[in-house]
Amino acid sequence: AQSVTQLDSQVPVFEEAPVELRCNYSSSVSVYLFWYVQYPNQGLQLLLKYLSGSTLVKGINGFEAEFNKSQTSFHLRKPSVHISDTAEYFCAVSDQTGANNLFFGTGTRLTVIP
Amino acid sequence: DTGVSQDPRHKITKRGQNVTFRCDPISEHNRLYWYRQTLGQGPEFLTYFQNEAQLEKSRLLSDRFSAERPKGSFSTLEIQRTEQGDSAMYLCASSLRADTQYFGPGTRLTVL
Image (tube, rainbow over all chains, first blue to last red; front, side):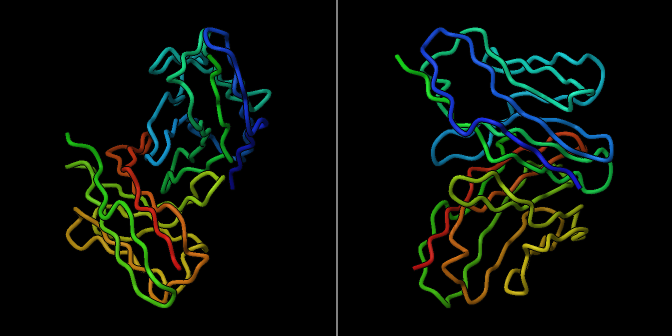
């Protein structure tokens, strides 16, 4: 089975400052890795995904993430945040075979301070 | 491509009543998933369909829960004899390939 740990439940950051949201995973098989964002009372929107190839992946809204296999991490970064980035961010993994259902972390609440 | 839609968006019911939720996936997506999200937690997998076949169910899906996808298009999730612990956001997702799921806006269930 897979599991995901998001080390920070809340991250406050000032507008235009950089941010890193941390994610570590555990799995006995090869996985796909994802970051989703959730705005209040809405579903999940895909930010970016790692399937294979380059370990640095770029997503929407200026976000990027780096897959580190040796550290089993997939941290999300943005060099300069905006007020509109305030939301809940979820890291998730899935098997590369079978049902491919997602296993999510508990989320990180990013609050951008003006 | 109009995205995944879910109906209703909100449902308030009394304990012991039955409720049914509907999910319309992105057209041509053969994979459909149901998840449940409680306050302060990430979504948890409930069940998975490939076309009309229900191929996987989580242990979270008790006997009071049933899901169908009769023609391989829309899906329904029914909860019988609701309990207060069933209060949650129920999310539906669909995908064409194994690697990317697209989520609907969710149905928020409140059991009084």
